[in-house]
Image (cartoon, rainbow, N blue to C red):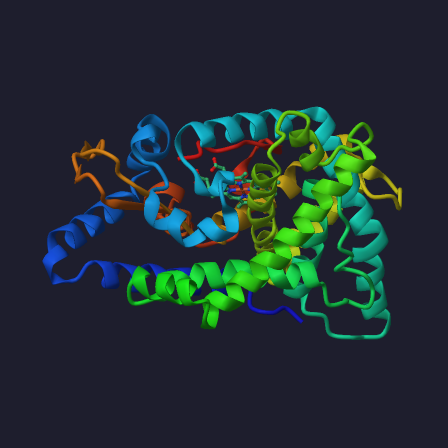
Length: 387
Ligand code: HEM
């Protein structure tokens, strides 16, 4: 069974949080700011303005304090929750590590293992028994196993055949959900008082974060004991240059958050859209047979690079159903966007990947159609300008 893709559920929740947040914080005395927020938001559907905000004038558009307060207890000083020098340091290290051939091969090998030893046996077993599977749940388990192995070198085994309950995944889910729901409070004072008194959702959040911390700290201690020389995971790599355990925990938790639901949502949408386009499935199969021949093995890294049509189909799915539908920053100083829109200091500026992926001005009159071919030139994958 194809469940409703995560992007709808999470997207609806984020949209709700966004709308309620605006309404809450923009009461009548702040009407001017409210209007200016919307002006900035609508003009941020123009690619040149988005490029200006997240690239050219990047330093003027930090993540801002309102978000870091909501997520601070879970993410600490991790990359998702900081600006300035701390962000630069982590970003540099992350780019260096994630860009290396050795980590790509490490990621490729561990994903292949998860596919071969867990995903395929699970799907085969369900097919043999003609059982219905919730693919969204399967992909969440798949991505959690992968991102934990990649980040910590820990295998939570969520995708084992029995689909076990995984305490770490549950605690992590609960902590991220409750942190995000803080934005729904009528005023930040509400959750802050609840936190102070340790009651209700704040008490639950505290317990969930405690569990996540215990696991993360346990893993860091274990690694210090056994040594880092044979480990390729992200934590071991960061441990060679950082000795502050709390900071290490924060860095790795941000990676878990970054790489879990995004990948699960991307995969769910991709297979959901394929289920409606058998002609695309046939074209992917044809390409795969051409590249790998009659081999029953999973394709190698080099073979994957030759699968241009598959790459195009994935990009096309991400265009129509981006796992992150919009992203907000806060203007540090007054600014003027390339189209002349004035952005007062403190304005929340939001750009919308979901809307921009469906704009006729950007993608043409067939912008709503699923057409992998739009990413191909003479059969070769051709990336588009990111803005
Ligand atoms: C389909 C999968 C993914 C999508 C669609 C996605 C999308 C995004 C987006 C939109 C941002 C925000 C960029 C910004 O605010 O400037 C982001 C940030 C980030 N992503 Fe991903 N991501 C994906 C997978 C991953 C994975 C697997 C990892 C880690 C292994 C990862 C690590 C990060 C990190 C560390 C950041 C923070 C960057 C920063 O603040 O500079 N992402 N991602």
